[in-house]
Image: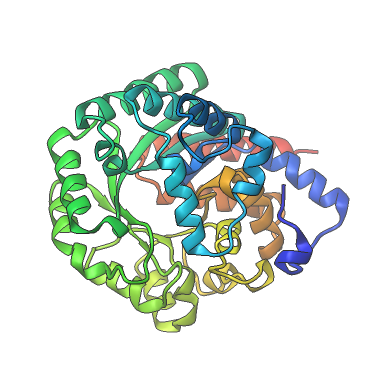
Length: 359
């Protein structure tokens, strides 16, 4: 559901019937998602199951209690809660359960393809072997595609708060084990106190090995962090990039070079990166000609899902069904699917939209 309007500020709101029709259109729309975290996608039922497996954790086992647990005061508090859920993933079986059930939840939203941000270091430092971790996500992916039709691919992500040790370990696992579904290399976690340039050698190695560069940048810091991601980490897409709107030259650069932004509106409000939906910079990004994709980030933790994020974006950008379909095609075009895969999914979006709009 859309977050409370009194708390988040009043975005433009169309009539109830328009919202209802658009919601139904979005629910059936074939979609791709490019910025969504592995552990952060654990729904209350998954978190409850994992917490029951590990009763020494402080994470509630009651799905209803998780609603209060996932209420964040700021970005630092979000990271604290996020890491407590990470601590529930302690065995290869936990990893497989999490991955498979995420795909089930995605399929219910008609997400056909997702590039899931995975943080191997969080699991290997808790005693799961690197090979067991990789085998678990790959096995879950194969089963999920067969059972649900949702294709999962991986972005292996450096947890920036864990320092260069985590960068070395993430790079080693990515390049030495190189699972079939691995397409990109990322950097997440807090930005404040974690400068992007220190990770340049690791991104250089990953890019040289054929992986795409997709670091987080400009979520809770200024435009310079985005510039650093572009110039030092060779970013091909930027996670969040929220503060890019503060720098017209940066927006122009992103537009000219067709470097997509992975925008996550509800996440930005929940972590207080943006004070209200009405003030979200997605409008400036689109107006500047930047290729914008819409994503859910850590959906259950923020009380959202990708369908809701499309509805939020449609309200902020005043989009009808055709506009929402074009937004969905942005994600396909910005993905690392091969040309045939992109053409197939875009054709599916077009066919669905034409059928919906037909007299």
